[in-house]
Image 1 (cartoon, rainbow, N blue to C red):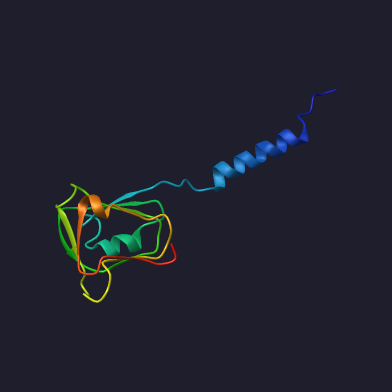
Image 2: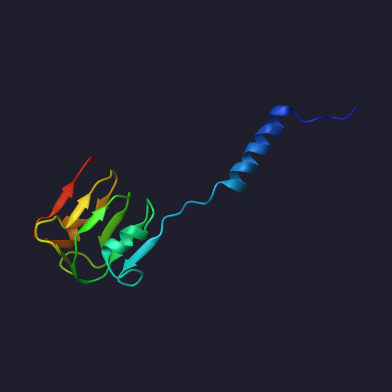
Length: 120
């Protein structure tokens, strides 16, 4: 009589195999502005949850709507990056999702109306 593996062991092996094969690998990506995308907003639009957007030195004139869980930071720290509102009646950053990390106080000079946090 041959030894048969228990059915639970076979079921567990099958589930493990399915997880490895069918679940895509999730990894965060660094996106650089303006290297990969010309604007912070276009980088946000292209990003996935968990990505980091690194903003190179310079002045950026835009209003940024953030609806993904991201980190947005300057490449070289405070004073090297400025974001000015393109529309002075709107916020520079409009964040509408939890778990967004914008390192504003340590690196970014905002001009105009600042940040708006909605539903967070």
